[in-house]
Amino acid sequence: MDTKHTTLGEFIIDNQKHFKYSSGELSRLINSIRLAAKIVNHEVNKAGLVDILGAAGETNIQGEDQQKLDVYANEVFKSALINREIVCGIASEEEEDFITVQGKYNAHDNKYVVLIDPLDGSSNIDVNVSVGTIFSIYRRTTPLGMPVKKEDFLQKGKEQVAAGYIVYGTSTMLVYTAGYGVNGFTLNPAIGSFYLSHPDMKFPETGNIFSINEGNYAQFSQGVKDYIKYCQAEEDDRPYTFRYIGSMVSDFHRNMIKGGIYIYPASTKAPKGKLRLLYECNPIAFLTEQAGGKATDGFNRIMDIQPTELHERVPIFCGSTKMVEKAELFMKLNKE
Ligand SMILES: O=P(O)(O)OC[C@H]1O[C@](O)(COP(=O)(O)O)[C@@H](O)[C@@H]1O
Ligand SMILES: [Mg+2]
Ligand SMILES: [Mg+2]
Image 1 (spheres, rainbow, N blue to C red):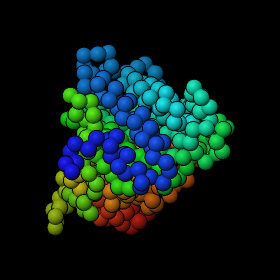
Image 2: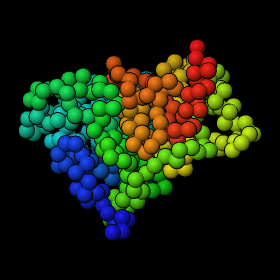
Image 3: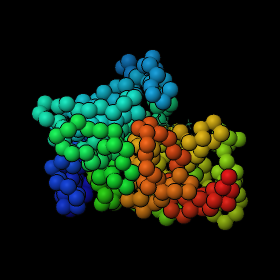
Image 4: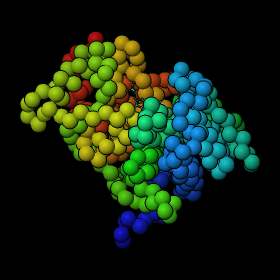
């Protein structure tokens, strides 16, 4: 069987036996995301020609200026999920509070909540550098038939039933896991279908790429500074190659293919780091572990962290296991 011609839809059905809940639900979830990804991709590809560049004039709950594409992507993913009668709640980087889905029928009977970063790498939108979307899916914990509650969203990462991202880059790819490995699908824009192009993606156990915003070096802890120095030292297989796109999805995607580590640590300016636990770090951590890598906050497994707030931030060290373990060693040696 030539995998290149396996479509995303076929792949979900072929692998339904692995999904611990009924397949129909997962395929409707992923299909909602697939549809929204194609619509956003269409807009991203012609961003300079349509009124989608620049700031939207609003500030989001993070205190960041929302970009027009943040708002557009948020609306597209919300409506794609709501109109498919599969989710009972949605949380988004661009929404202050979670959304209780009403839907046509009794949406309170729907079993899934979706947490989403509609547009990741917003600072790169206007400069034609690859950006992404990140999603995380849980089964609700509260009883069916009643409106979704905050606790349905504040579950530990290890409870995720599926997670993934879309990278809008030189090609557009959808990469996801439902707990049985990580698979990547490339969009054939001419046909409008995602095809399995990267089956069973695995992090190399080690690598030689490190990704961190060194511009914040002075604000980093001694542990992070020492790890950066270690990466730059002319010893053994080092210095490593420094690569930082500034879109987490794109830096992560490259590192998963080539071997590497992505770090967004705590700093004096951002004592909890910058990236959000629920719709950035947990889904990326699930993918990392499913691809044989490691994802921690420098000390603890990201997916064991008990969330308390929708938009809380955590430091993240994720990628090739040996590289994350080395970074953790420097963190522990310099624990403040
Ligand atoms: O400019 P900085 O501080 O290095 O931050 C870059 C990081 O911030 C992010 O853009 C945050 O995500 P959003 O764009 O979704 O807010 C990450 O994608 C990226 O890795
Ligand atoms: Mg983001
Ligand atoms: Mg975002």
